[in-house]
Image (cartoon, rainbow, N blue to C red; front, side):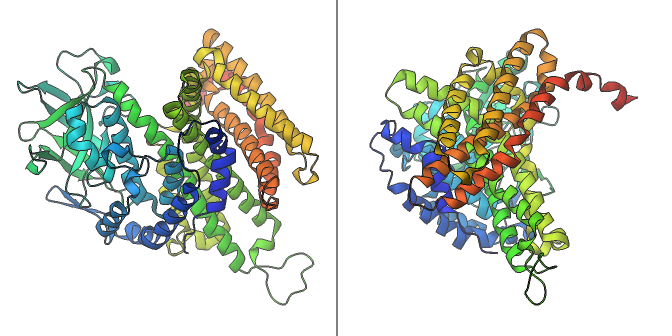
Length: 591
């Protein structure tokens, strides 16, 4: 089916649910012209529909090929990427000094969702380049910025992140890649990296790799890791490409999904070592890499939103066309579209409301990061940075969980046809699965939420957010609009469960940390359910006070509150009561 970007839904979520409009009124975006947002997104939607979406199935069927250490992408992909860069899409939020448009990260976040919806495997490449831009801009030397930053911002060259090794996945400190200092100030890097997305391809003439490695005299663990910029081709003094660097794709993975995205094994050192340039300081590479990872985690969360919305659009279209059975009381001849059946309606609303909640959480994360970078007030920047840090693991984990759940429901609505590749529903399901794994598994995100983000400053960011969410619920309750049903009461209960769970976890992190860790994943879901429900209610209130087309948004907010947020009480009990069963599970698992 044809993809259509849901511009109205995106704008409502961005402006009201995520707080972009409030941040604009507060002056945090300087002279940014908010009227541009809709125009940019409309153009992004057209490009996605016309150029990227038609290649989605082609990429899945053709995949990529490795021959003579060179990766070839699917038919049409190099041309699509050329059109992408010529249209300026790679530099939407890039610094203007280096060829970017300087638009807010929040606007680029909406674009990222659109790219992921139309062609998630294609959108993954610029997502990683954006992370490379962030790291180089924040930590690179002026000389390296002069050589590489504009090329990355414009998309003329792409970027990669290289952390994972066969023995060092989530435990990055166990990596063995080594770097040796050279007399000219460069480094020679040796080692093997695995699962490197777009480690090699034929869409650009150079690739800029950001690689973690360890110096000979480095401390053990993550405190002894440095970050190096390693270009595929060395760059001459005049900016032209020079010799091929000693970094190659030595293998590609055959995967469940994302067939069109090359996932490479990268080998360095077969011919004397890859020439690398230090980013930041020696042994401080994790600090630099986290700049990349946090950006990428938000991007992956947006992938979850995008693939969920694509699956929802396809399932809705199918449910309107596919005829099976008859509705109770139907007076028509023959069978009715399956959309008339209550359980199909329930699944479609589940898909739409979960996607909408995840979207707004991701956009709110982007707005917080924007304010942290753009506000002229130091205290405001600090509060926004803390808000962004708190929301990042939620945006990544919840949204990618939702991507998996919604694409699974999409298959279910298609019935047996969903299990057949020809419909495309199965591809969405396959493509979504990796998002909960890469850029830090969702379990790690949950642990980060509990041990670092909740614990920061005694939970100050959580209490501040809860105050805002309680204000939203009070507005819903004060509206006395019967269309909201029991939304206010359900959200009030969810926030109570979130507050009690948060206080319990804070205490357990000191007295019984394993109990807290055992409850981290259900706490993540509890947090996201309460947060997403309140954000959707806020959007519905804004729509209600706006152009009069509020009915559908009130219905989405009500469904989420009464079907998803209502689970908060059970999740609270799971957080608090399941620790003993989890910690005693060895007998059942190993007996």
